Every structure is written in C-alpha cells, then in structure tokens.
Length: 169
Image 1 (cartoon, rainbow, N blue to C red):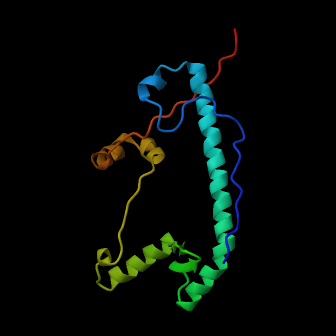
Image 2: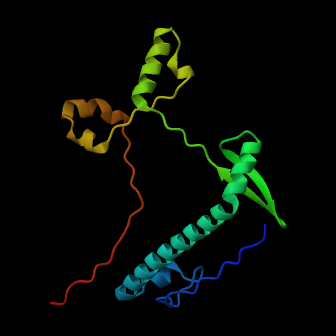
Image 3: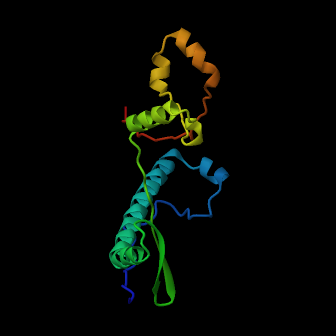
C-alpha cells in the first residue's frame, strides 16, 4: 500500500492569546482579565472542535485505507473482532475491532433464576450490581432512604465555569 498524502490543516484563525501549550502558569492565568479569559474559553472550545474534526477525518482515512484489509486478515484468522497486524511499507498497522457485548437484563434475570433453581450459586457465574438513580433516591420516603443511606457515598465531579457577558446597563 502506498501512502496517501494528507494536507496539513491551516489554522482557521490566530490564537486568542500568546499563551501556548506548556508555557502558561496558574498564577499568570488567574490574574488574566475576565474578558481575556472569556476569549480563551472560546478559543479552547474552537480548538477542541477543530481537533475532534481532524481526528474524525484521520479516523475515516485510516478506516478507508485499512478497513478492508483488516477485515480480510481477521477472516483469515477466523476472527470477527480483535486485534490484527498489517504491514504497510516500513510500518506495522495494528487494527483493533473491539467486541461490544450487550446483555438483555430481563433475560439475564431469568437465566440467574434458572441456575438458582438448579441449586447453583449465581455469584459463581455473574456479577450483580445494584444501582440507585439519585433522582429516585431523593424522591423516596425518609424511612426508605434511611435504610439505604449507609451504603451511599457522595463525591463531587470536576467543577466547571462559564463566562457570560452581561448586557450593558
């Protein structure tokens, strides 16, 4: 296979600041004027969108180039999914097609009931996880919540901030 030349993307706009990756510091950024922070947030969002678009284009190009040979190599190995290796000039291309199994929950419950009826321990075969949606938990009566609260741990996620321009008075 020969290499398909891919043009290098031209930046659509100059950066909103002279801040380059790896050169900024937390102290310097915390002292930045809020209007500049707003511009930086916009620039970061645009860069993320550009990066995602380029990553999608690259993925599509790789799939167009290696998808068919990878599928043929998997068939030759008697595999539907998994990792295979293809040689392309001086490169070894690792093509991975992960398996994504989906389980029908009501059918699983019936299967667990069946092996339980046979006298087998379902824990030897399946892992059971009980989930409590927070919206349901908060709607429960206090008496029911009290039974479950010892099993509940609350953690926080990463804080997020947005800057919204106020309208002039």
